[in-house]
Length: 311
View (cartoon, rainbow, N blue to C red):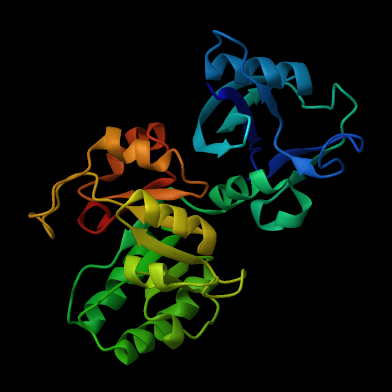
């Protein structure tokens, strides 16, 4: 029977939105790299109890409030590692390296993948992404879609998706280019549903792939500075997504008005599929903003919705 090693890690956030990281000792595996503090869960210990204990032992702080961030699983020849990551939003005390480890406060945008162990890269991506992804309604009216985008920006949304599959590609691109400066000005990314070969990068725009486009990929569709995502409807599609894109949308969790003939996966099956995915995944399908806590408990980055996130 494969040995399961359960590890918890913490992304501790301060009031300025900076995240605490610690430097690994030079003599250990991947020494000299930065990581998120944490450690092994002891036999019979709850994950949350392990989180509190580890932060007290390593940093001298008392974790007071947290939420699930991402749950990662790695299968090795002789063991299975579960890395359960929490975002700690309130704590008591001033953190310091009780074991002599150097500490730094970094904004997620300052975190470079090469400075961290490979297993930490999905954590960095999860920290950079918001919990809500608003998807545009199907409309033929460009002015209505412009108003939708501006209303989402006014509501503080940080990640949008412009799909409009019924439009010619050129029309989608033209609208995206018009909206991109408004998005870029306030640090928002507008994911464009256009073919890979048609996409033209500019600040404020990302690229979203259909599952068919994802399956056709043989390399990452755009450079790493461009946010790339994909729609997924199966575990094998999620496996491809973690090779080629930054995050995925998986659904439907529940039956939707737009696809009433397609039954929802339900939370148990959705969670079982996501457990093997080493990237942030948004839950999609029939969800509202109030479903966010349940989505996080199931391992989601957050929720993506059309009607559920209208302004």
